[in-house]
Image (spheres, helix red, strand yellow):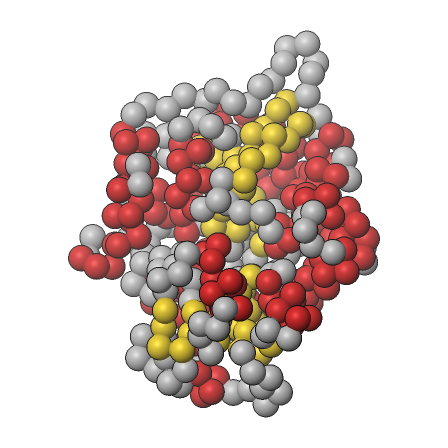
Length: 340
């Protein structure tokens, strides 16, 4: 562990993850009735996002039901709380950035975690400028004020990687502000802070429609393919309920095919109940934007090349505690069986 490079892990410890890691954990949540009832899988999602469209499609279109699975979905708002929910048996499955599994692995949990299914395969944020910039160049960022995502999170790491790839040092060439909480970044920009901001959807699209900001670049396109958001569980569940996880991945795969093959309007109509405050037109536009840049994984399989790229990005940002072998944190057998 190298000094300041491990700030994010120290935050995890302060926030209470370490005590969770220190106690023996028991699988409790995945209820498998002996009377033929469906299996209930408790899923903790790190945030509610159109970025996760295939998950909601799998629920709404009955793909989980076809696999005799009931989904109990909870939004846990943040990587630390999401992984704590998983490790403390408040959830069977966490939908969260794969980088969190690396942070947890470094703490040597008594019941290790494993990535078993891919949901998104690129970063989901966009660079938004305050002024229209039809001829945008990355050099335009030099000397500008820039509202970024939190240090140690995958959005910020992917964003920094994209800037470096385009000749911009995020800590020297721009006035980087990481002091604003995730949920307040859009509001801060709308209130006048920053020349540029790194935003998820639907904020980026809504800002364009309202004339508040203008999308000038995609961090997903710039940072490449990687296991950005994945389904993660504990090894104890793999050992005891692997068949449930195979069926879970099979349902996700059906939803991934649905998202790939149906129109963005059809997908938007399916997932609209999860986004009461967002119009179906905006949802459809966001789905289309993510689909065009291949953000939605085509199947649940997490490949080794993407895993290595993830760690390269983390390492370049100074947030990688240690390189972890692909086989140690990715279970491909579950995806392979689901795709048979």
